[in-house]
Structures are given as C-alpha cells and as structure tokens.
Length: 233
Image (cartoon, rainbow, N blue to C red; front, side, top):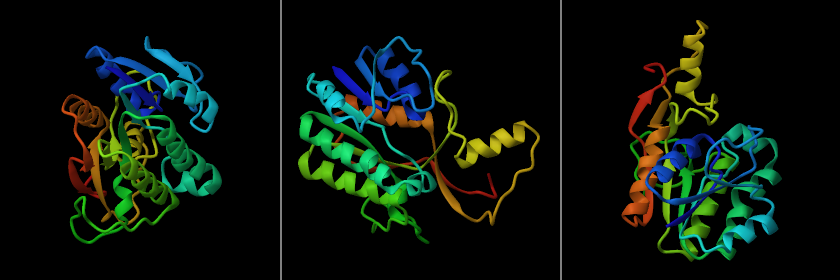
C-alpha cells in the first residue's frame, strides 16, 4: 500500500513514519521542514509546501492509496497572526488536494471545533469554533466529507509526550511545557487552573491512524485519553 504523509516531518509525523515503515508500508513524506534544516529518516522524502499547488499536485497524481493529512498551521495564536496565510495552508490546500486525489483520506482535525462546553461532548455535539484555527478545520472537514464517503477524520485532544527521537517536540502544549519547566527547576505558573484539557499522547495518534488504515475505518471520531484539569497536571 502506498501512503503519502503530508506534513510528515512534524510532531505527529515522527513516530507515525517509523511505525508505518516498520509495518512495511510504502511511505512518502511531503514537508516544508519549517522547523528543520534537513530530513534524517531513511524514508522517501519530497521537500515542498502545501501552498505550492503545482509541486504537490505532481505528487498527488502518483496514485497513492492513502493520504494522511497532517499539514497545518496549529493553534489559535499562530493562526490569528496571518489570517490569509492560515486560510491558504489550512483550507485552500485541502481543497486543492481534493481536486487532485481520489483515494482514502485520513485527516487530522481538532476538538477545538466544539469551543467551550460545560458538559461532555461527543461527535454529534454542536460545533462552536472560537478561533480561526477551529473554523478552518471545520470547513476542511466539511469539504472532505462532502466529496468522499470513505474518509476518516480524527478530532484530536491536546497532545503531549515524545514521539520519536528525531522530530521536534512541541513546547506550546500544556503538559510538555510544564514538564520542561519542572525539569529545568523553573516555577510552574498556572492561570486559574480549572480549565479542562482532553489529553492524548502523540504516539496514540499513530496507533489510531494505523488502526484506521488496517480496518478501513470511515467517519469522524474524537480521539483523547482522559480529561484533566490543568491544576491537577
């Protein structure tokens, strides 16, 4: 099976490429190496940005069985900095992909699409995006599901943990930043502390994706382990 991982050199992609390669899948990674200056893994790698439609379209036409779409500008603050760029990367690139690919899509969305809620949510809960980031994810979800009925969408909780030994760990995530500060002997500042976070280890994303591939899973699913208050972390 030929698999293209778009954004495969990032936080989720590190462990994912290792496991898919170990399971003998034919893996290609497409990434712009935003936070790296080289790609170190023995995996077929194509350097490029998702906004470069002419380049990625040449790759999309190579008859991949599955696309795993990880590429995105992530986080409310980062996306708010440049709304036009956010729309280009998080939405327009997905629309371009849909016009040039006709296989199975596994797409990473976010539990942020639900906004704030005082009750437990499920996949049918009302969507109340509070940021451009969440809005672009909802719009991309709708575009994918309107064209493909065999797609699989994961709305991820707040990630944490180390994936592999090469890829950059994200330090804008609550567990990771608190752990780093604790290891360095720094003060842990908590503003309020009663905020809930649905946590999910970054390696568990890989296991969910692998399960979706091996069992041809279709549909939209919330993926998290357990809800925690920040003060308890």
